[in-house]
Structure formats: C-alpha cells, structure tokens
Picture 1 (cartoon, rainbow, N blue to C red):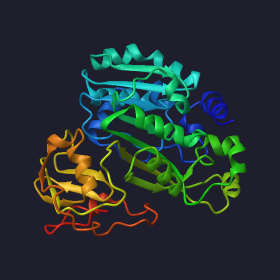
Picture 2 (picture 1 turned 135 degrees about the vertical axis):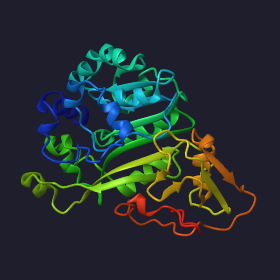
Picture 3 (picture 1 turned 60 degrees about the vertical axis):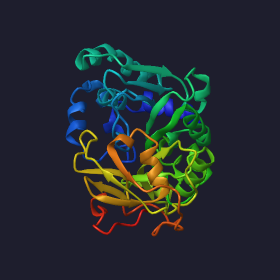
Picture 4 (picture 1 turned 90 degrees about the horizontal axis):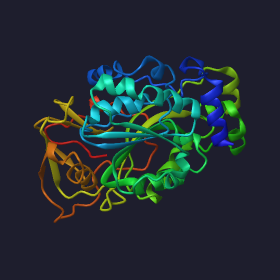
Length: 352
C-alpha cells in the first residue's frame, strides 16, 4: 500500500506543493545566501512540484558524488548539483513516474544553466536500492527529504544507504518523527500517509534502526514541531505530536555507543565554503573559527575521518580515556536545537 499510495498521492492527487493539507512536507527554514542563489537556477516547474520537510544541504560538497533518495521532481538534486560542481555528481532515485518526468524534462535546461551536466535520475523503489545497479561504497553523501517515512521497510533503506556510502561518507536527511509509535491502522489512511504523518517513525525506533544498520551515533542537526492545522487530520491523530528533523549519520566503523572523553579538541579553520565564521556539526556543536573546541571521540572521528578533515586542526589522540563526555544522555533529542546558543565558551562546552 505504501509505495502505491505514495505514487498516487504525489503523482496524481497533488498538483503542486500548495495542495498539501499540513506543513509536514513543507520546508520553513531560511536558506543561506548560497542556497538561495542555487535555488534561483532551478526551473520553476521543478520547484512547483517540490515536497520536502527540511534543507538537505550538508557542508563541503565540492567534488562529492551524491545520491538523492526520493528525488521527486528534482529540486534538491539540481540544487546540490551546483554545490557539488563539475567534478561532482548527483543521482536521484524516485518511484513516481510523474515526478521523474518533470525532473528529466529539464536536465538539459539545467546543464545549460550550470555550464555542466552532472545530474542523472533512476526510476526505482528506495526500499530496493540493491536492485538498481548502484555501486556499493561509491557515494560520498546520501540525502533524502521527507521520503523515508513513506516507505514500509525503513530498515532496508538504512542498510542499503550504509552499503552504498564510502567509508567516512554520510547519510544526511530530513524526515518526520513522532513522540510515540503511530497506531498501525493509520498506515492505511491514504491522506495521513501521503502527508508524511502515519509513516513517521517514533524517534526511539529510528535510533535503533540507524544503529542496527551501522550508523552508531546519529546526530540531530535541526528540528521543529509540526502544526496539524487540518481539523479532520488532527482528530485522527489524537494526541500524537510530530517533529520535522534533520539528522546526519556517518559511516565510521570506529564510532562508539557512548560519547567518550579522550581529552580531545579541534580548531575550525573557517575554510568550508559559505561557513567562514562557524561550522555546525550538529545541534550541539557550533565551532567558531579559530577557537579551541573540546569534543568527544565520536565527534573527533566525524571530523578527522571524513571530508571535513582539511578544514580543522586536531589536538590530542585516543591514548588516554577520561570516561563519558559530560552532558550526554538518552532523553528525547528534540526541542533545544538553536545552535546559535551553543558556540563554545573559552573554557569549552559539553559535547552532547
């Protein structure tokens, strides 16, 4: 039911983003100037068929090979293609023929606009990525924007994403989460499913699935509560609360279950394009240029063993262990992600 309903809802029921009945599949974040400039180079018809709940624009994409799961009409793919540049590439995967037709129709238009052609689209179900001929261990970054909630076998998506990433690569995605498990019978409601609500993961189950797939330390980047303004939909959902959240998951075998303290620190050089003053690793790590920032061992690896390494100076190693890094916990992660308040003080800030 899930795949068929997704194809019908996004291919036939919805004509444009204005037809959505809730803000679950809408992006309210204000893009940075570079992202706004890139969006201005995306065809209007592509943008009109966009359904996403976040900004899936991870930093330092120059030269990266990017995979977009559930690429729809292609807005994110064409946006990221500009940031990846002529030496990078973006492959979009989608199962809705009507959306793919729009994305493919404007490939030439965008190539002329950008001055290079680096975008391709593949028709297929993201639950069955193993069947699409994609090379394992070949992608630097995988993104997805409000699509994983729509599939039934979410574990299969996380497993396949881990397999397709290079060591040190990351899955960076936005989706909808619930504060409790959504009753199974609501999955059969085509509107609730199409509006990205009934398939939303309970955040604790997401954490379990991500770690089982090999992503040992999921990091929350941003989140916002969702307003269910449609009375009929709100009544069906009773008291369930929903959140739109963006996570980044790194493929690093050395990550530990807890954030362990090894007395390490980093200094951000200010060299990531469009981020000269502060680098945001996640909701709790806002690293000012030139300032020493204490971090746990996992955060160290997320910077030292990934494409971000050239942008940081590293202090310390793993030779001495000081226990769990202060401030780590297992409470619900949402609600305190104003990263502007978490810039390190001169004597350091808690890691998590």
